[in-house]
View 1 (cartoon, rainbow, N blue to C red):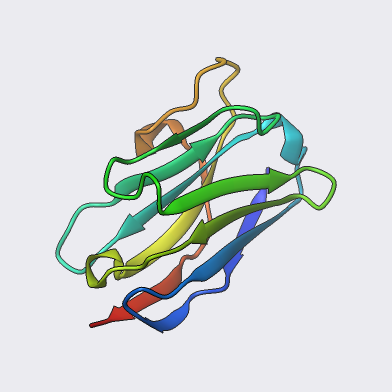
View 2 (view 1 turned 135 degrees about the horizontal axis):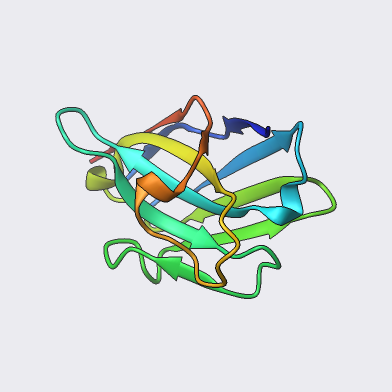
Length: 126
């Protein structure tokens, strides 16, 4: 069973950048597809980005496409989310999650992800 710990959140002005990290332990990290989700107050958890086991295939929500980049380093058991051109509407708690399914395609729905981190707060001021 894998444990996930996010870091890198904080307060940033609109137009700024942040890099989130998610460190995995306790499992074979390279066997999991990984995803980032976010949840704003009063809203449902939503998909942000996902990456396959090798890192060769990624998927993004339309709202972040062109601004966010997901990547992974299997040697370091870590997945990253580089966030540029941040907007106030990006404010949320960001979660990383691990999908153990053996299908090739990455999943965008939370129900496919069995393991979750505790989340890190990202606040973008206008």
